[in-house]
Image (cartoon, rainbow, N blue to C red; front, side):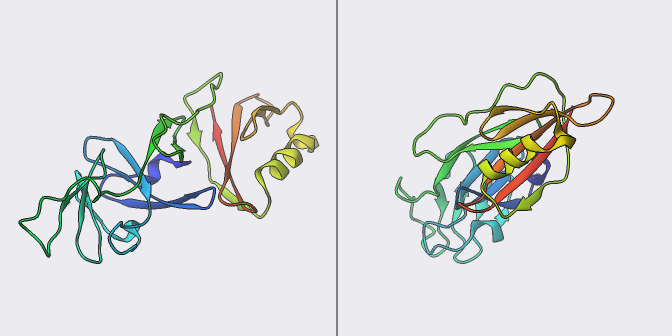
Length: 188
């Protein structure tokens, strides 16, 4: 998951989930694309490419991939070639909710699982990276007196009211890899 504003129009954001490096970009119609951050041609990071609003262009050889399907639609070295199905970036199912982009890394999988939260709309807060597993971070937050009343919604989502006004705050745990977790927070 990443903060939705980072997937700004005409920009490509770099993200990571469970060791998978991701390229996140929004097309001009507002659709968020989440792809493996690797061009299928020579493996160059797609996040250093260009976002033209309806397609993403790899910086290395200029291959262009269309929004939604990740299908290659242009190869500059072979302008008359119509790229077939094998010529596509690896795309992942994504959903935008609570100010974040949620991703399902499963092959051919449907929409990602997004927890049902009681309130909203949410304002996303600054994220931090912690050298610990998501389970370790959750355990520590649930045991701290400052977070009394915090409850686990699932293994990656904590519901807390951490101020006197009782403003709903949700903490989202994103396992970047086996030993590192990003802690995101959103206040309702």
